[in-house]
Length: 103
Image (cartoon, rainbow, N blue to C red; front, side):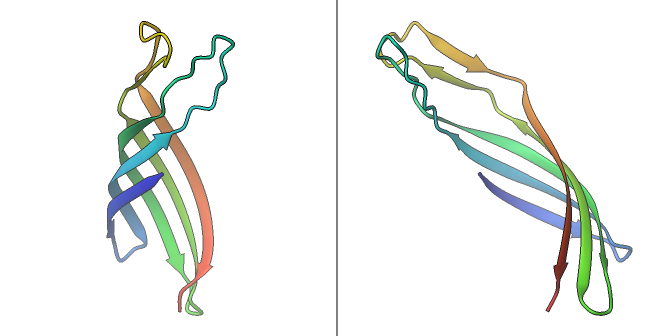
């Protein structure tokens, strides 16, 4: 997974991020027919909102929620191209709490 983003932060600790994500999907199934499905890649648009508080000591706590809407993907069977798997309307979401130290 690769994500590139732009971040805007306010003086009050609130921030937002908008970005582009790319992921390679590796298929590993082993079909009884000897076939398999090709690996695929997909791209997505990412949006995140968060809050960061930094203490005078440089220790910070950051809380963030993010969501990504992914492009549709399809994979064809390597031995029978009439068999195809298609996935659409993919989305992912996450929340994180990070603690660290700024130097």
